[in-house]
Each structure stands twice: as structure tokens, then as C-alpha cells.
Length: 116
Image 1 (cartoon, rainbow, N blue to C red):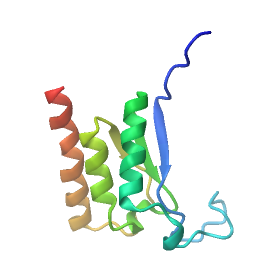
Image 2: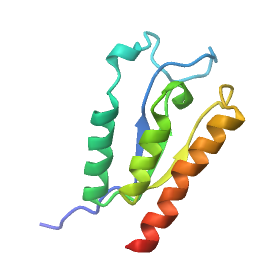
Image 3: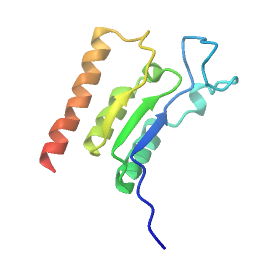
Image 4: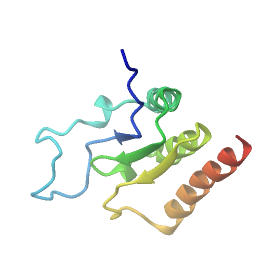
């Protein structure tokens, strides 16, 4: 039996919360509340497991991933796990402080991959 190749990417829908109400959105009609979302430690475990499987990149999406206060932590954790990261936001909640924090977290990827 031939082994399956690992998936190339993980689409991590880290939240269904979103400040917009776009009519074409594929979010569920009954959106999960923050209490129903995976916590930071659980997402970090998922990211570690994905990297161990051979996943190369993670796409942080939602809802609006920027509503998560721990998004920089998740991006940094993914980078340290050797995963290429990108965000799929509406960006209506993005300000310069948050952009700088996300850029700092994503730079960890470049230094982490140079060491391996």
C-alpha cells in the first residue's frame, strides 16, 4: 500500500466571529461564540501536529482572524514550528500596532527556517 503524501497546507478557521455581515460569506448562520472556539494552547497543539505531519503552510482565516487577541501568538508559534503563515482577513480591524506585531511574529519564520 502506498503512503499518502502529507497535505501541503492547513486552513485554520480560528474563529467564526466577524464584524461584517457579507451576504456571500460561507460562515455558518449560527456563528460560534468565543467560548466555543479552540483556546490558544489547543491551536498551538494543532499547529505542532500539522508541522509533524509535514504540512508546509497555515492559512489563518475565519470569520475575521483579527478578532482573536492571541493571533500574534498563533502566528509566532506556527513560525517557530517551521510553518509558512498567511492571513486571510477582511482587515477592517487592522491598525498599525497590530500590523507591526504580526510582522514581528512572522519574522520568526525566517529566523527559524534559517536555523534548520
